[in-house]
Image 1 (cartoon, one colour):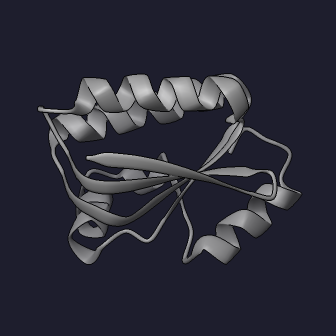
Image 2 (tube, helix red, strand yellow; image 1 turned 90 degrees about the horizontal axis):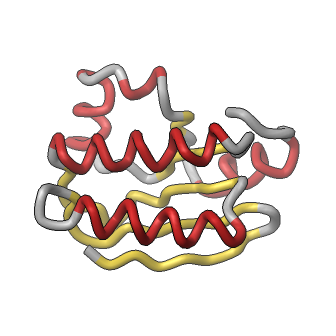
Length: 117
């Protein structure tokens, strides 16, 4: 999986390209930790190019989001493909993650909210 970033307004956008599973969940966690330590109290995960998300990947993703929130940060998720969105609903991850319809909505919320969501 490839991770790339972009700063849009106050938000750090983390774009995921490929799959997130057993083979790379530790690397993902480490890389997201490093990225968010520097400038990540407002993070948008762009899942447009995420091809699969295993249970190992879900755990790493939940852990990364939890670390950001414990520091008073915000996490938004955009561009889930239909299969992964369905898995998010089945696992009730929609109660954990703030899913936005698109990048514009996520960025607008980041600009106006004060943290913790």
